[in-house]
Image (cartoon, rainbow, N blue to C red):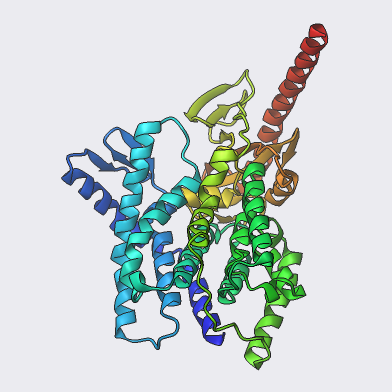
Length: 472
């Protein structure tokens, strides 16, 4: 168990390697454009995006291949954890770098093909992660001993680890992301192959399958990580049903993990469990291997892909919220607009983002990081974020209310079947105004567009009531 914790700690450290993004981008961009040119495709690197023929792909953090590299490193370390580190392991870790670049290039080409065929349909983040995971699988053969001759239980273990890391890696820098990663990795360190299908196991599978459909249908994406960790085949049930285990499991839910008070509670539970392991009083994992059956194995593989695809199949679709009329708007994508209000300062830009499919909006830091820009809180004003040479601030409109705080928005939209609402982002050059002035103006502009949106919603509701009364 201590060896497991050491490997898991190393994987957590790898998840923090955001500084690799720029280096990998430096290698990935020419690899993508050069390979495309070899096949006769006009390819250009424009900095913020890549042009492949008639397709324009925004260049984000994930396009660098950093998440693919972290997953490959994590799987390699975990799969070889029972062996002492040697030269072969070092070679494999080094080879993960070119493998991640190639897998990432294939992911980008796949997404470019999707956009070419289905544009202007929006490709969700889940699709990005799913395509990346699929291109990751062929490279696992290089880094795991006897991959093709592994037992079924180890196949499932490696697949499970890869899927959890695929969800953790892009979320690590979201609010509470570090706690989500720590809590998830703690559970991964305790995974073990449970008993064969029995009455209790069958009930557990039925509950697990039902939970997957509920999460997908209600669009409660924050529950996918704990759902994966509670896989009946691998879940450490004695840990799950202890008070510390339940507290740590709650730390894998972002809406709880982002709160300082809950971070402290989960941190105490983690410290207590680690102390028990170091003292040797923690119960040892079972060494008996129970192999999945012929029916269970394909069922597990199919269900494990639910976080990437099931919401798109059965999730409740919510209409894209459009900006209120009467303002100058410029459509950027199918769900996003740049809006200019009367009297709006020329240096301040305002963007209106409807929902990406049926999922909740991400925080401003997460959105910008997905686009390759790292933000931090401005020293001059805690309510403003800055990245490069821009001030940035965001707001959320949900259920007729305006929210300035991301945690308040998540709490308001967390209930099942809740619509995602609208994300408003404003930015301005740092050399054109102070952070305080920008914050005040942002609040003023966001309040104005929210008021117009609210008034339009009231008018539409009254119009529908009038039409219904006439029809009766």
